[in-house]
Every structure is written in structure tokens, then in C-alpha cells.
Amino acid sequence: MGADLYLNRAYKKRLKKMQPKLNEAFQKHASLIQGTIHYQQSQEACLHLLNQLHEGVYYRDSYNNGSIAWSLNLSWWEDISPMLDTKNLLSIDKTYVLIETIKGKKPQISDDLLEHFDSKEEARKYLKEKKIELLQFLQKSINNDDAIYCSL
Image 1 (cartoon, rainbow, N blue to C red):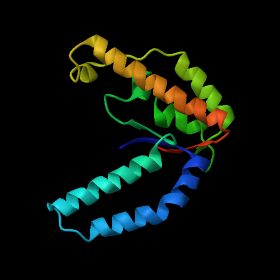
Image 2 (image 1 turned 180 degrees about the horizontal axis):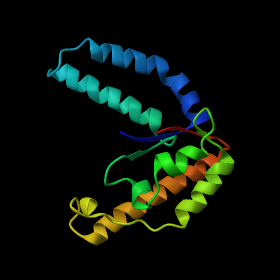
Image 3 (image 1 turned 120 degrees about the vertical axis):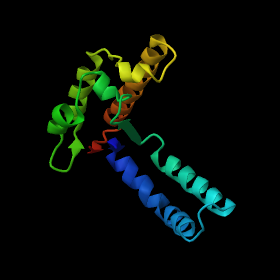
């Protein structure tokens, strides 16, 4: 589970273009027997297509100890959900607000997250990179004048 964010127009456009390939790949995959080499190859092909679909137009923040929102003491439900319109879109104006909110916060490293790293410095670097990725995604929305669809 996690917060799934999509550059709305860009994602829909890419999905429309890729839909026939995706349908074909997933139908083929569903017809194969699990555990076979063909099944494994088909699964890899499906994952490759999904990566192509999501590249540059999708951002995910998992609901776990590695969540950048949680490390910034933000909640996708309590802080960000109220910013969405009735279609679950984060408008460009609200995206500016969210960027400023995020910029003003420093990631906090939880003990649970620290267990997955060799040092506090590695955990800090991980959260810093996640914060930068999220800010870049949000900025891309503004630059492209493309609202963000949020599945929280």
C-alpha cells in the first residue's frame, strides 16, 4: 500500500498509447503456467512495460517506515488529502503549497527505518534522495501544467 501520484494528462496519454501492448502482454501472461521459464519471461516483459508506462509520470510513497511523507511528519490522509479536489486531483496552486510545505521540513529518521541501514548517514542520504525525487515530481507537474492524480 502507498500513495500513488500520477501526472494526470501525461499518464492518461501514455496509457492510451500503450494499452494494446499491455493488454496483449498481460493476456499472454495469464495463459501461462506458473513456475515455467515462459511464465518468468512473460512476467519480466510485463514489468518492463509497466516501468515504461510509469517512467517520469508516476511517483509512489509506500506506507511504511521508508515513507518520505511520514519522515517529514506529514500524512497523506490528514495533510495532503484535504488539498485534493473531488476528482482526487492536486491542482497546480495546491502543488505550489505542498512544495513549500515539504521544503520547510527536515526528514526525521525513525528507529524502524534505521534498522534497514548500516548507519544513520545512509538513512539520512536515502530520505534526502526521496525528498528530492518527490520535489522534482511535484515541480514537473507545475512545469507541464499537469495536475497530479492522487490515489491515497
